[in-house]
Image (cartoon, rainbow, N blue to C red; front, side):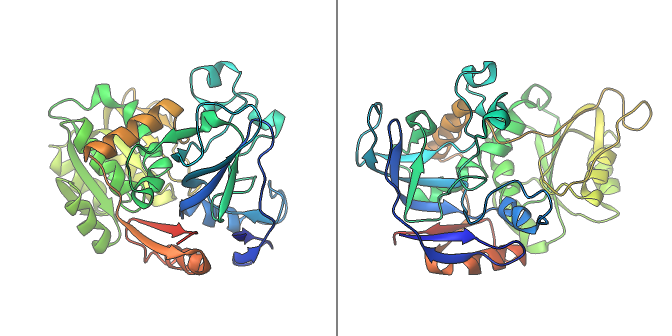
Length: 346
């Protein structure tokens, strides 16, 4: 089968031919119908050789949907031909966090060498994907594969971040979304669907701010050195009750801190590597700062249900598997509006 692999540190990914996988006991083989392109992959491919955590070559793709092609011995709960989405952050399935459905926070994954597909084990940017356990599959129930696949990360991750802040997003509250690309434009829709808060979107790109307005942002602000003052003015000097930074670089993290209200939540979702100092007098009183990772299996079911209801949709552009390297080039250059999706089997 064809697969897109990161093969050499510092080099671009390549489309290669690899052996077709076969499911062992407990495993499920999917024929991939769509695979999502994510900034996280670009981050992985920018890491130096020293301390690189994964074995190469690595088939990319941690967002995946497909149809069940074959079942290993002992598999139940799914059947051949079923259309399913893949829950990406695999865990051990038995620790306290996994028992809650929080495999994204599995307590034993690192010790046991358990990795998500595309982030340590073969991913979805291939004609077929081997899934370790049927519990990591969620029925699509009629959702279009291209529309659904970004929801497994670009939908699930902001949903998880927003859900923990819902008690603060009451009528009259303000939520700030920093970065309105792949995850941010979904976050705006989730905030509009789940809360009555005013949504203020920040980005450096006017094109992405237009997208933010299209998907429901009440206000848009250019993300520059004047952005914090603009948000303060919009909120009567009080700031925002919840701030979601989907970039995570020094300027955006600083802006997140500068626009937070007393008792606000700040979620640094982007993996730009910046940190926000916390201490008495550094931020407004009782501000909570967190760095969420992905989401739970139950939350993925909820996100797909929201999509099915029409409350959230992802702007996508599609590419055949042979053009997957081009999709990464466009994403790296900031030319992708919304989310790029690879369609491996046409």
